[in-house]
Each structure stands twice: as C-alpha cells, then as structure tokens.
Image (cartoon, helix red, strand yellow):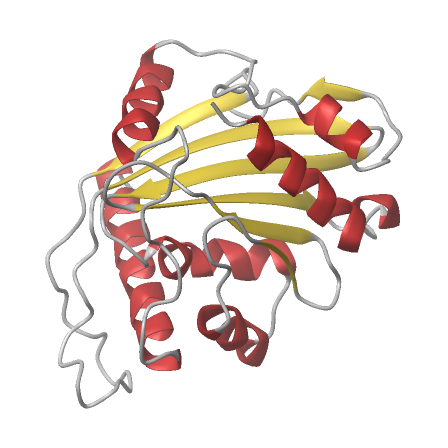
Amino acid sequence: MTAAHRRKLTAVFAAAGIALGAAACSSSTGGVPGPGALSYGSVRSTAEKLQQDKQDTCPFGLDLGKALQAAGIPGTVTPDHEYDGHAVQGSVGDGLPPQPWPSGASHPPTMPSIPATPPNADVSCAYQVGTARLDLELFAVPQSGVAVNMLLPGIRRAAELSVAELQQVATEQPGPGQTRILGSKGTAALARIAHQGEGDIVLMLSQNPGTGEPDQALTGEPLRKAATALVDQLH
C-alpha cells in the first residue's frame, strides 16, 4: 500500500468519524473560539516544520514531566523514539470532498455520502514513564466543532471503547477548557482547547499498554489532572 493510499484511507476513516459524531448528536458541542494562544494556523505551521526538522522536544511549551508532577504522578519521563528515531512528529492533511459510503454500509437518510473532511494538522509526542508508554496528541482543524469527531477512530483505540461508549464520547464532548477521562479503563484523557480564530483544537493524553495491563497510576483522575496541566502549559 502506498503512502498516498494510506493517507486517503485515513482521511476516509476520519470522515466516517465525523458522520458518527453527527449522527450521535444533533448539534455541535464546544469548538467556539476562545482566548487561548493557539490557533489552527500555528498548529499547522508547527506540524509542517516538524516534517522537515525532526526533534525530541514537544513544542508549544508542553512538558510532560512537569505535568505529571502537578498531577502527583511519580516516575521518570524519557522521550520514546517512536517516529523514525525521534519522539515528536508532525503531520498535515488537506482534507477530502464528500465520499460515497462503502457498498452495503448503512447510513442516516440525511447523509447520502460520507461528509467532507476538512484540512487538519497533528503534532504527536511519545514518552516512556517508567515501563509505561504515554502518547500526547494535539490535533487541529479550521472548522468549529469537528476535531473530536475526526479523532473518534484514534480515541476508540486509545481508550479501548465499545461502540456505545464511542457514541457517548461523540455526544458528550468536552467544551473549550474542559478535560474528560474516556472509557471505563481511564487510559485516555481528552481536552478541548480555547484558541484564537476559527477552528477547533483538542489535546489527548493516552497510555498505550501494548499487550499488557495499563499502569493504574497513569489512568483515571491522575491522567485527567496531567492532561489539564498540559493544557495550562500551552503557549
């Protein structure tokens, strides 16, 4: 499979996430512009630079070690060189027009096609905390109220959600300045960022236990507090 094909498939899956979110809630929750320092443009330009200038330091002042201390979580934080030998990567997408539904797929009568996918930008930072892996993702789009819906496939993986739990996330999204734990295992925290200008920005902090059991010190309320501390660092 070519890289272009993978990008197209990812965009289609993201568009399907928008459709799921739209089907689960009749109106958008959150995503309104706020007084924060970030904007879609600043996240996208940073993600574009990271594609050329690889690094191990998370941008925008994000310091996981300090965030864990603020949340009362012990442990030594080290970069995890997950992305071609580096701990940080940036990616951007140019979006897609509406797509036909896969053959045989059921869909709401009001959605004759998979909704268009807006352009997007993503900055990901990988860490080791003791023997546990933590992933930090900052995701931005230039359209209000759709960032969470576009992330639903990744949210489902990170929080190990059932379909019903995923629909609940789509329906009960955090508003700007809010951070929520996702799922019964508590392995992912999601925050919606108050920002400048039009668009929508979310931050997700999640534990990737691989095939083992998650580190309970990095789940639930402590993880939510750590994610909130990361949001407070953004500049």
